[in-house]
Structures are given as C-alpha cells and as structure tokens.
Image (cartoon, rainbow, N blue to C red; front, side):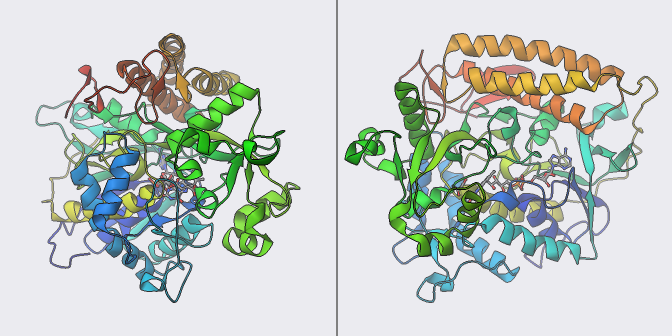
Length: 543
Ligand code: FAD
Ligand code: SIN
C-alpha cells in the first residue's frame, strides 16, 4: 500500500466478511488503524475459498489492457462501465504481483509471464487466467488468511454475524446521514453487540443461496446488499444473476462447480443418447462454441435440456487424457472419482446453477457507497465492471483492485468524532417456538426463485414470484419483530430482501440482455441503462 497515505491512526474499521475482498481491505489498511473482520461462519467459509478457475492477469505478450477491456465489454452486453473496466484491467498485473508477494502459490510455467502458467476461459480472447491448478481460491485465501492471522492490528472474529448497520437515524439526532457502526450477533454467546466504527466495509459476497440450485457456499445470502438497502443505499442490476453452465449433476452433489477452465482446455458439451458429431451442440448456438460467454452457454444448455426432456447434459473431457486431467484439474478429478465417475473414461453430467450476483450495492472506484462511512467491495458491490454478464475470472480481480483502492480511501479519510450508539434492544422479543416456519420459508423462497426467476423468464412468472415474495416478506418481518434473532432468521430476512430486489429489477427490464432473458421481450433495446433501485424510487437510470 502507498506509504505516504496519511490516514486515521485511531478509530476502528469494521470489515464484514473474510473473503478475498474483506482480507484485501484488511491487509492494506492494518498499518493505519485497528481492523476488526467479522465472518458469520468459519473464517474459511465463503466463495473465495471455493474459486476454481483463476484470476485475470493481463500479463501475456499477446495480451493488452484494451483486449481485456474489449472482452469484458462484450460479455457485459452493453452495460459495463468502460472506465471501471479499464481501471481494473490496468491494475491487474500489480494485483497478481501483490498476491504473489503475499505467498499465493500460482501454477508455474518457466516460459510464462512472471513465471506463471496462464489458462483460458469462455469470453477471453487469449490465455490470461493465473491459477493454482483448479483450486485457485483456496490457495489465495490460505495465503491471505495466514497474513491476517499474524497481523497485530487485525482482529478476526468468526461466528459473528452483522445484522444491521447503525446510521444517524438510530442516533435519533439530526445531522447528515452517516454509518456509525454495526449490530452483530456473537453466535457463541448468543448476544447482539454494538460495534462502533470509523468506517464499515461490506464484503459479504453474493446472494446465490436465493436459488434452490447454486454453486455458492452457505454464506452467500446477500447480507451486504440487504443491509445497505435497508440503510437507504442504491442497489443496481440485481436482475443479472449469472448461472454457471457446468455444475455437477449427481444425486449426492448438486452444487459442485466444474470449472470453465475445463472447457478452456478443450472439454465439450454433448447431448446424452446421441452419437457422433451431432451430440456436440454448442457450435449450433454460437460460433465460439463452448467458449462463448456464460449467458450464451447456460441458455443453450437450458434450451437443449427442455427440447430433449433431459435432466442434464454431458461434459466430455476424455480426449484430454488422464495425466492432463489429474495434473491440471486434481480437485475436480478427485471429486468425480469419489462419486464413482472417471473423467478420463466417461463424460460427466452437468447442469447450470446460480453462480454469481452481478448487481449489488452501488459504489465508486474507491468502494464508497451512498452513505458516508459505509463502503462495499467484492461480489456485494456494483462497480459497473460486470454489466449484464460477468466475464469469467474478473471477480477475484475486482476484489483485489477495489479492495486496495478502498483501503487507500479509508486511510485518507479524517477521523470522525466518537458517537455514543444505542445498544441492541431485545426487551420486546422472546425465543422463537417454531423453527419449522423459518425452514419452510427458506425452502419455499429458493424453489420459487428457481422456478419463476431462472434462466428464461416471463412477465407472468415474475409477477407471481413478486406476489409470493411479498407474502413471505411480511411473514418474516413479523417473525423478526417478535422473536430473538438467530442466524437462520437473519439470513432468511436478507434473502427475501434480495429476492424482491431481483424480481423487481427483472420486471423493470423490458428487454433481453445478457443474463436477463424474457420470453415476453426477446429483443435487446438499442440503448440501455443499469436498473437502479432506491428506497424513494424504482427506476431504470443512466446513473
Ligand atoms: P466471499 O469470498 O464469499 O466472502 C464473504 C464473507 O462474508 C465470508 O467470510 C462470510 O462469512 C462473510 N459474511 C457474509 N455475510 C456476513 C454477515 N452478515 N456477517 C458477517 N460475515 C458475513 N471468481 C473468479 O474470479 N474466478 C474463479 O475461478 C471463480 N470460481 C468460483 C467458483 C465457485 C464455486 C464460486 C461459488 C465462485 C467462483 N468465483 C470465481 C466467484 C468468486 O469466488 C467470488 O465472487 C469472490 O470470491 C467473492 O469474494 P468476496 O470476498 O466478495 O466474498
Ligand atoms: C470457473 O472456474 O469456472 C469459475 C470461474 C468464475 O466464476 O469466474
């Protein structure tokens, strides 16, 4: 981090989330102030540790910032903010160098740039993905977590769940709106604590758990988006939920990702029960075949499954050979073997599943949200990088580049005066008697989102979904008002807020673009804007 930044040497910054976004902010900020990092489950639980394919590095001699910007713009289907894409692409080589300096063991190639092996994924014109075999996220997370654990100014708290932001409104006094801290449930002591903070950073990841089938970990319940929304921040582009084309389809596992890097190395998508060249269907959908952007591939699979009445399609990697598969994709190969499938001798069954939340809390390129004192970074944020469809491996890059920029910004902010914050009030609530209500509503919400707000949408289904979501929301709000909070209840409350944002955003978009495909509006409009949701209004806006 830039050593001439003069930041607040006192005061605490609370970072909600211990994934790549949260840890990047923490490690870049800890020499300037005390940092508390909250993780609602174990410190290793989150999407980062599950990332497989890799992280974009514009490093190769055949590559350039402009080429990466072009691929990001193409994938994002007219909604990428070009300035954001260029800012992030330009910072990619220093982001990779920073990760290497933190000790991340990327796969090596003595002939490669920086001595790294680069792989390829859909939508990328060239090989530009730095990776650690097929477990890149774990390699990154382990290295950064090790640094954070050993840093004297970083206080890591697992099983602490942020439940709401404390804003000027809670202080019952006039003055400009600001975030002053956060209420957080300390799960081991079953207590809600009040954490005052100079700045609060939302780094809570995505909202994939809003869908029945997802590649996401249990942490992905959209908490940051929901908290920011309740605090009055703008939320953008929530209709663009990315469905990853290839999630393993197996009775014992419906959430294990089969990395796009496999298709990058030549694996093909085929129809079961059909022999010969006819089985491979992607060339019939797009000239880029298996390496078309994800929205195109996921929709093609959905189309073929519906047309042929299939439960799944095949991903065929047999021709890559056992040695290659075992050395380049050890995690995936081993997982399939453990389920009785040998990728070297048989194709594996795959289906699309909810994977990435392209929209989120609106921020600038320093992570600032609409509320002074509140920042958002990583999958929870909307910077304009992903537009209507994220380009593969851009997410980890965004976490690092924006995490560093956000830390610099916070460090340069003047200290704010101490505020005396009201404690959490539990005087009106009791322990919940019927946990089954929460479990039932979780299931109902996720199933209805899967069935009504999936890869192909219609206005009628979206309207039905909105009606059901609003019923669930009022039931959950009532529950929340009367019973002591638990993680399940808090997560459900956040999921239902996110579901409503997704459905309302989808209803506003009367066209098909990127990840949002509507049968009622199959065409793409000539001009388009992000869908910006704000408490005081709901609109499509050029903002
Ligand atoms: P996460 O890593 O998800 O971390 C969120 C953190 O927030 C966790 O610590 C969680 O406990 C905490 N948290 C959440 N809510 C609360 C709360 N209320 N209170 C306290 N703590 C909270 N992207 C790529 O670029 N390349 C890839 O190869 C790639 N592969 C992927 C593979 C899989 C299977 C998945 C699911 C995603 C993949 N992605 C990939 C996407 C990428 O991994 C994520 O977008 C990225 O890791 C998000 O990082 P994050 O720090 O924003 O969130
Ligand atoms: C994958 O490995 O296919 C996931 C890459 C990503 O989501 O960016």
